[in-house]
Length: 126
Picture 1 (cartoon, rainbow, N blue to C red):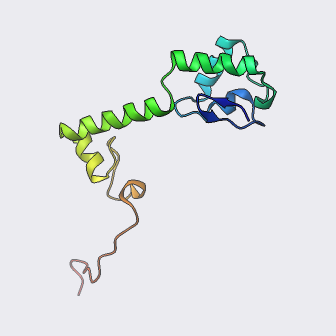
Picture 2: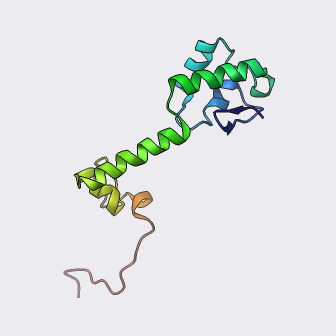
């Protein structure tokens, strides 16, 4: 199991798929990294030589923000939004969708499980 930028990537996966296990690298970026380092993206991760793993690690560290630094940057951005009390920051604090989604009938992922209200009467019925 190769270790790239402090992450154990799966050995049996193709190289470009294995790179996506690093936070901040998707499939497109992984393919670009493979092209820049001249490594076959379809080669399995466990067949990579130590030299190829070093090439990948060096390129990722030099040119991309990944893992801890990226998580820290995202957390700082959210904290900044919360401290200036802008609309997006308030939505983050309350735990509601931030990007304008409807919340009357959806947004269960952000709002959590339904909270039933006991004895709620329907207006207009006797």
